[in-house]
Length: 181
Image (spheres, rainbow, N blue to C red):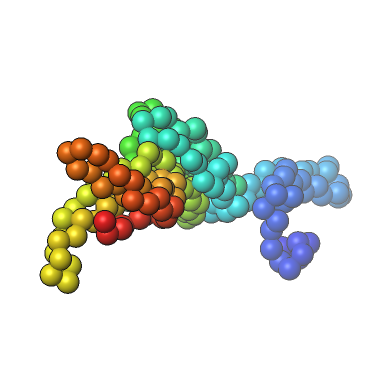
């Protein structure tokens, strides 16, 4: 070990074939011995090909590849939220995605020396949904209009309707809007 800086192996450059050679002496000729040194270590430098994947609801997202340096080679597992989605270094979702599939997907690289995790976010985008709810607020009947969408920014139009006419009251641009009519 005295020939290695800081008495430590370098996980890249010290993986090599090493040979010990003796000189001959009065009793016998030169001899040698050879070995290959392979330094083993836990996964490190883990990364994913995409940090955020935007996908529209009912479509299939692109693949995300997870990579890590390790010796021996790591096995890979994709988790969402804490359940295995797939084994292998590539996250492949073959079914059309739903809005409740939005979240953080974790890639775990593991070998006998340890494991590391990298994350990617799947952001499922969907068309706005609008709901009207009747509530009593300050002793008055009030209609609450709620709009949800992703991306969050949506326009909410308040409309007053009678049997004879529909009257647009106003137009509001808001995020995850909840407005009293």
